[in-house]
Length: 145
Image (cartoon, rainbow, N blue to C red; front, top):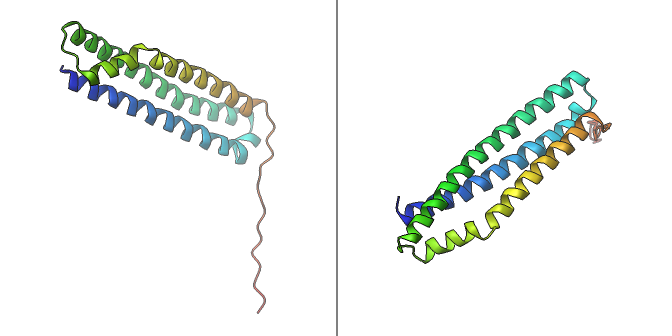
């Protein structure tokens, strides 16, 4: 694999990571809305089912991201091989510096801390918090003529 292909794949990895975070925000936001309007007042078995479903989705996203992380590690190793051969250009050095300076590790740590926090908060919001829906009753009235 050439340096250009490796750098291109690393940029693709970053795009995948951002897409995963975006999907996580979407799933969590949708679940919170569902808690507010439906799940919060449901029986325990329905809340367990809803929490299990959202947990499955978030776990699948995490498994995908762990797989992408191992691919990313292989790409970094390939850049190191190219560096040892003395063929690494400025773009490759920048990508390698980004991967080895701790930025990637910080992103991974924040992702794990964030996901554990999300599971804890969603668990609290599903099973402990007592929801009062923000439903606003709207009545349709005929306009006086």
